[in-house]
Image 1 (cartoon, helix red, strand yellow):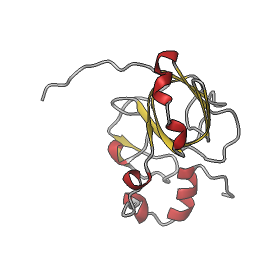
Image 2 (cartoon, rainbow, N blue to C red):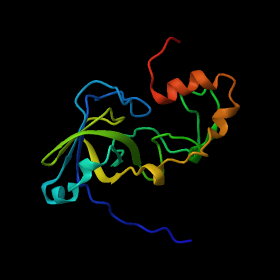
Image 3 (cartoon, one colour):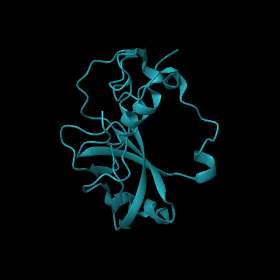
Image 4 (cartoon, one colour):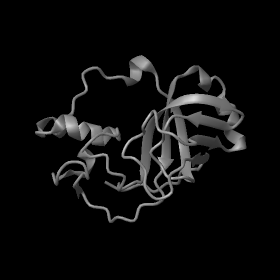
Length: 165
């Protein structure tokens, strides 16, 4: 198989309060300024987006310093090794991130959102609406996480929910 090479276009910028550390997943109730700023030439694409409650935010993970490996140890999984594609590690062959966030308000080229799990200044690649019946899979499972003895506690870490350790 021949690998294709192609370019992606940045369509905006993500603003967040995070400069050095960010949660593993978006935290809906997170405090701070979370905004998506769409470049002016793409503002027309926001028409009627405010009718949706949630969106997918697709972005370029531009601050990875770790070396790519096909095996990873999720930091919340007590040393368990899993394949990269069985994880949500940001260290990927193609550093593309995906977050689902709630739309709070849209004004002009700016979308105010619930908490995002990205660093301030992250390049925006795309936005897609989250559609209730298309995007909610009622038969989804926890995969290998289901096998862990302290699954309920680990899910709090995965979701970035503050709790007593």
